[in-house]
Length: 566
Image (cartoon, rainbow, N blue to C red):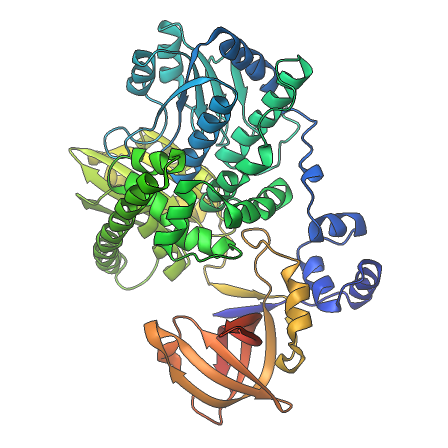
């Protein structure tokens, strides 16, 4: 794996460090993230809810809040149509809870991944109408769903679309469309998640109700940021700009959440009392919420987030835990079959894009399989499950390849497609699948002809482990939360001595490293098979961390990669 070690502009780093009152290491990282203006750096290091710009409305929000206010005044039933992933589930839960707190009547509908696929369908619209809804609000879907919106009009249901996906050339005929991807939207360029857009709708609605005298205070918006953080992190959008603020405060709300569903979700996920990090959301909480929508209906996850009784929430959370274990088993089987198929198709070599399909592959887990293929082989991946003559696929990409544009190149063979530059989905007739599998690598190569398909680690700076202390870790903690757009800082140390090394549980590498008489413990995940010998000298890419053990804290380093010097 390549190491791309960035070379700081030392004069600019010293200037930034001096003006901010931070260490040069923090200034290095800020510079590497493109944050060199002092005011922006201060905002980055000290997020504030005022940074959300809540006084500026998203395009379409004024029309939306006017129609929602009318529904609240007239006692109308408001139908919320979400999606089956965590972003759509949390967005639905947020709108349901918020509108109910305002005294509104709500019903909700989440599509079934296997039976209906992504997005609003006429059948979902008809179900909300059957339950008495006269106003429909989509969340995390709708921007491409012309047929469903038309069916709503036929049923005399007004539609408000709340979405964040790529905007088509022709928009659905809704009474209001809220999507930061709209060119004229003041928030254009912000990669808000679906639940993030829904949160901004709630901000606008509360302000409208206050300004018109309908309510004096209204719901506490900050208390909803736990749901926003869950959906934003799970949807793998950049943790920059507005998302950084939302996630920063949302993680605090998650840590202290009093929602029975969140409390029980943390219990079954092994997330203990104390701070909650992005990794805990992405790898523990979100997969359990996702599991039910992957294998069956997502309604179970929604009922957990809407639960007001802790005993009931505990029963639901236990069911989600069991479903997640089943999901893991199905995922491993499909991944093994996909690996074998790739070996046959490519003759042992890898094309610029990887595309595989399997009869009966569970469409609920193919997205995870695509992610793992992309992570393993550093290639855009498309994984298709075929059922009853129809293929449904999930795609994941790498930096430099816009997977949505790749699908545009394949559009003549697809029934439906949509998504983001980094992740997308498609529906295709079975008879077209072989052609797609053959053409997909060509489409990827055409979209990114000069890309090097080799994984690499981006290293912020060379920094000796002997200079890693608690003060450094505390300084670096100000750069959290980490994610796309703001990765965890990595540093490189040269010629570090291995005092001892052994393989721990789950292929974990444990080491004692020495540099200039400073001894530090090190851990490397999924590196146990690479255990070096005592006395070896290493070049190491690492991140310093605080390790807590029996009430005591000490600095250790998390190894990202290493090379044994000869």
